[in-house]
Length: 308
Image 1 (tube, helix red, strand yellow):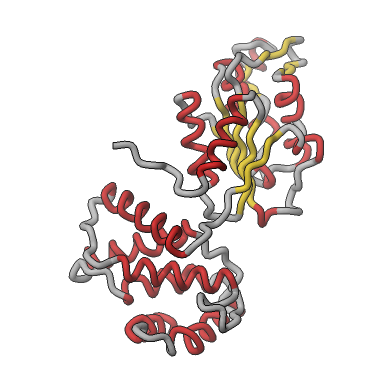
Image 2 (tube, rainbow, N blue to C red; image 1 turned 90 degrees about the vertical axis):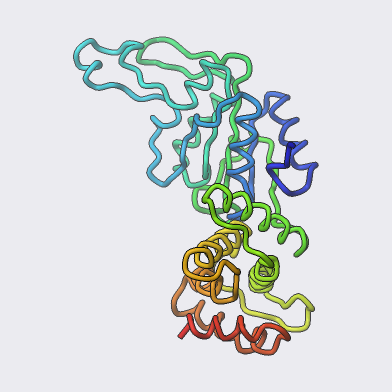
């Protein structure tokens, strides 16, 4: 049985696949936790059978990670040669006609980003030290990811942005869609970790999703109460992590039943990233929303206990 790897708007995946089929580079854009890396990895594997040609973007990513480097022992002994050259993941993808991935593109310094322009527009990587150039084999392409919240860190130049077709991955549109995503991934991760299935765990999954969505949106689900939002993203990926950790607690230190006490500490850790400001937001949410909500008394007590 084939199950979907990405649960979200089908049209977005169709646009992404079409982009790659037309030989244009793809940029997956979105807030943290919208499955950009997950989609990137699976698209690369589906298109070229290999998702390991990866450049991880950081503030310290050097140009060699995008272009090429040198084996300095060989370089000193024999001078510049192809044997002394150390290809980057992008150069290897160009030579093999496969897909390279770049994670967190906007975290890479602007001058390093600019080295991508020739690669993407001309499908060529000059090696001036050897008086040669590497021409991309048919099939070569690039999938990059970028974080919506990183705008202004190392914003893409207009020249580089034109080389990409951008697909924005949204947060789940409805609570039911998010609950479905969390429950599916938790079940998959639980199987891989040999965790027993938690009976009646859906109630706690829905509660975690409700808390995350309300704090993320700055308003309760019924629209009646405005809330302050914490500094964290409270993404679907973090909800999956909270529930998975709760299942592990229930399996190893409880009776196997997923209960409020199993997820309370994980929620606190996800919400309170800034110990001063976020703790105030969390306490206010507990006292004005959670405390008054029918059927949430056990959850309120568990959260109060871990927050003390």
